[in-house]
Length: 301
Image (tube, rainbow, N blue to C red; front, side):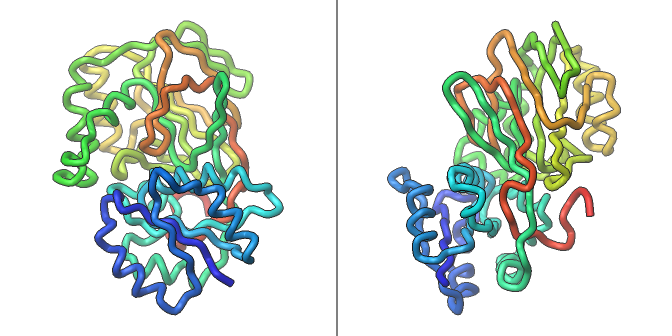
């Protein structure tokens, strides 16, 4: 039985692709390089017709995001398992799943373990539906992502996310939101950002959702209210000391559903991909994709 592997030449550590090929040389594996012309869903459907039961995403969080969206278009009864080989800049979701950064060890995880159900998040807006595995970051977080050039990623590695935030921190935009979190209403909130997390870390292994678990059937929802310079300092310090959720400017809930409206409209990044449509509703799809996970996975047992 042949597995299907997608790899991304633009990933931050794609220079390790030779090592990955060496580790996979004894495995029946079809290789597809991701380009703008590749229809991932069509490739998966073709592979399923040939008996494939495992898809491999070799890249970073953006590669995983693209593959997850294609997998969620496959019926649950036919949906193959997903393995992640971390070749990206940050590899945040791979870290949540306990997948080693070492390519040889990550491959051994795939060859020698069984997949386990992992949650995926569905987002809906006007005329669109998308999915993500790790974190949706909205508001000023999007502005940070837009600062990240390929040159900045190459020079700074995972620290590029912190480097890209410097210009944004001095000019934060305020969003006026109304939110419904599993029936709990918040009206007239002034905020800087909203994070909807399935994984624990984002933007280069920064722990933005320290209590998140990708297999508990819940979303970790974090609303960061606006404030002054000292409030910003408290939030950053809280993140560094592991007490981020205790800050007065942070509203934290675990829930299965979030509905939100914002003025001005709030854009989000989905695992690094900026979307221009405004999400209106987030729902957890519990255990949607079977994934290969390590013993040191973050959150839960």
